[in-house]
Image (cartoon, rainbow, N blue to C red):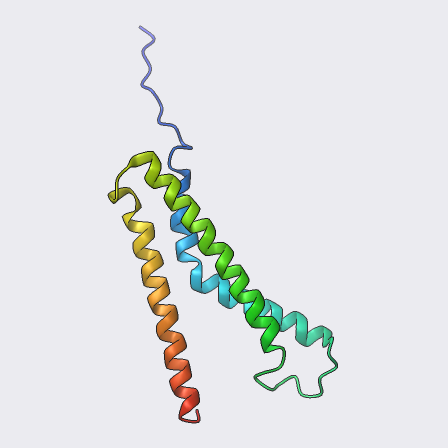
Length: 123
């Protein structure tokens, strides 16, 4: 008389959720990191630069931190996606996170190419 329906394990889809979230953060987390590093470097000015308004002020630090955070995010995405695939053995189970990641990477590369083209024409 006390039949209960088995509850699904809420932790079984955790790698899928993590993969989707990390895939959608590729561009935003990189941009946010760059702005935070710029804020910190401009406010503390450790090199004692005279012109902080120049576009290249602390560019090396900004790029190093941004690409490091991007690499960590991509590594986490890959680990979560591989775990999800090994659990399910289904490409359909990883289709959404992989699609989001591919779109994010294409948009990111396109933005870099367009920015480079604008810089080359003097804009």
